[in-house]
Image (cartoon, rainbow, N blue to C red; front, side, top):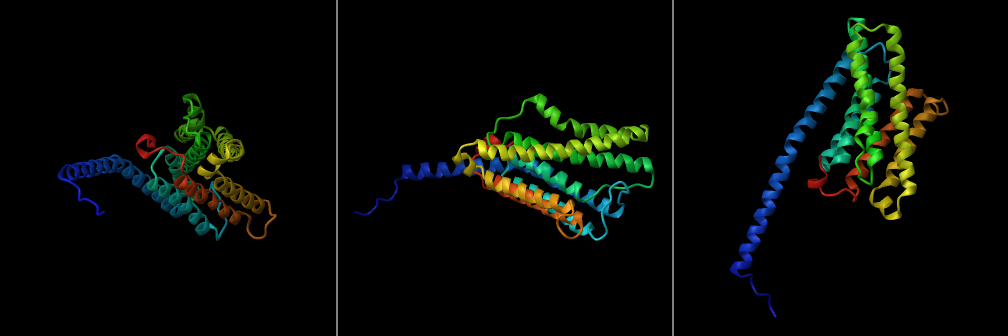
Length: 278
């Protein structure tokens, strides 16, 4: 028996459904357009910072000869991974990862110097604040993934307070004594490293604490493998265990944003964009 052609009523309902889907798609695109403009503006700001740091490098951040280009490429890996993941799948988790990638692009691009010591110190604290912001975003992501429960306000304040302190010190550098600024810079660096360490440990704990289905759909094995591999190679290289220039082994850290970005885009845990995006 042959199939009957659709009647006028079926055709009308089908055309209405298509129009509704088209309007919904237009709304989604218009909803994301302002955010994409901000993302492009953020990426442009990172590129401007990196160009300025290359033109006027800071004497407070030492980069060994011959590693300027490799470390610049490492920063580009962070930048592209963050933007690519958010652009492919806008949402809360990829937004945190985007912030991590933008700040990583600044961090590995170096700090900006200045003709006056006070200006150079102020820009250095801006650099530290951006670095702390990226580390906080990574820990924020690790704390909410893959369960999706938002952090309490007080913990968000704790996470992002070091970045605010860094910006405050950038302003205070004009009048603050050097004896106060040097320990403060060390504390900011220590807190940032601690945040990164806790973020990695949190992902590892989640790998073994969630059920098998969630572990697979959240791509936790890929995330943990990338973090452990990149961190271990960089640590062994910095310690002189591996041959070559110790700083060059930091390039292995590029594995972390690449695997994390792939996992966030390919995971099947996150709700739909309309509910999840912020």
